[in-house]
Image 1 (tube, rainbow, N blue to C red):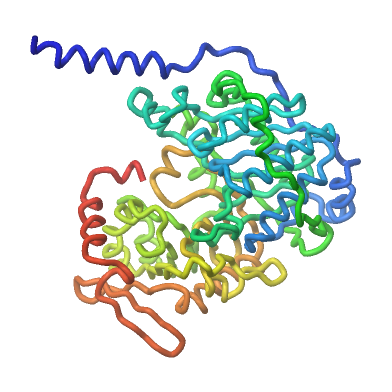
Image 2: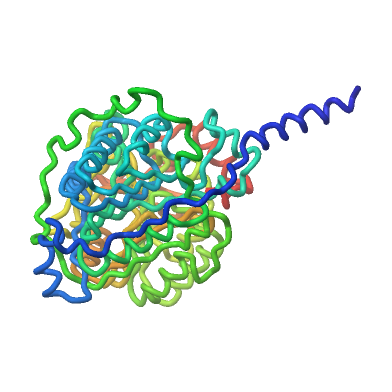
Length: 499
């Protein structure tokens, strides 16, 4: 009977595989972004400035978490024709429900709502999304969906190559006139409303020439083979399941003045071919290829901000080549104490010594008390030197500056997952004002906001500056021996490609 030890598990796996198969594909309703929205309130608000700046885009950085939520709510409330939304995580918390209620209210006014969500980040929302999708003005699709809904992790056992590829893009476009893209997901911790978790993040609000490009990019994701209608995946909504949405969808939302506070500059959108979600994108369709074409080769300075910084061997080699050519390179990432995905730190830690030996300056954001709000302080849309002075418990912004001339803001982490597995989007902004603002942070207050990692022989030291005091740490600040031991073991596992 020893053969049963092989047959029973095989039959169990086969049963799971059968239960987790994607349904037979059917035709989906075709739709595309509206291009006749100039007569909307948002269209009229930006028309004069756009006409005076042909081919350019008006951009404003959005770092304050309350402003980030308010801008989204206000734009949804102002929508007249269409709303296209694409997100990796959408929490079932107060912020997530408030925005869903705002979308339902917009649909009640006759606005067409298209919502494309990664299925890995919508825990607890199946019933609410099914209810919202039943609205005649709303259509919701899920990217690389899990067929087995509870527990979703079972899907990885039978369909890992597909389900390991996620849509990390984050964008909201209203009436094809205004768009917000960046690092924020939808959830209380991204908007300064979570009691324990706060993150420092960054978005860009944009109008003008770049907006139709974002809409066109949304259209290709909406129509891609990884996007499945919720009606094919989620169970039908039960009666009354939509009543749990916020009763006050537009609370405290005031419309931002779209004619003021914008800098009109050249902007390029870079994004992945959605075929990457099935492992079928060609190299020229990957965001890394497009990003290199948009920014060119740094000549003098490169300042990188990435919460999840996991350079591969080739990444270390590339940064070392830059410093060898005389380029000054600074990198800001999370310290182990601040990182909200600690396992990622295991992928980053082994690269510190080779990077420091090559002349790269490494900075690790200090952890802060949960009650301190995470925000990048702005003045007239510029990241100031005090950007991370009152930082939150975790860094989540994905941005960098090149030669004080160009700035990137988007969803792209500097890790193998963003490069090879997940799909991403971002803007390359040609603005000396914005780029110099971020570069100024590396030249100024970063020493107060982050630990500087130094190499002392073979040992790492963490230099903490607190006002006029300098403290030297011999170990990862704010951590204990067990935590450091776990990270050390994890850093020696052959799993960097998953991070």
